[in-house]
Length: 64
View (cartoon, one colour):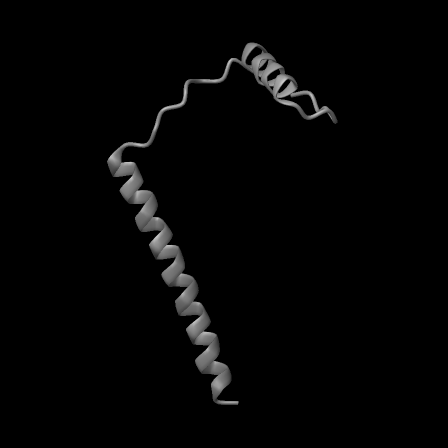
């Protein structure tokens, strides 16, 4: 994709059109409900893991 300093809607539209012609990207497919649920659960798991790590550090340092 070409990098331009000029930033207008017309230039953006042309750049996107050239990208579509040159790269021929696959069509966007929205996530299924099952995929959305899995993504949501992974986010929750990641946040809980971070929180658990923070709590371990907090309670380890609390004793000092």
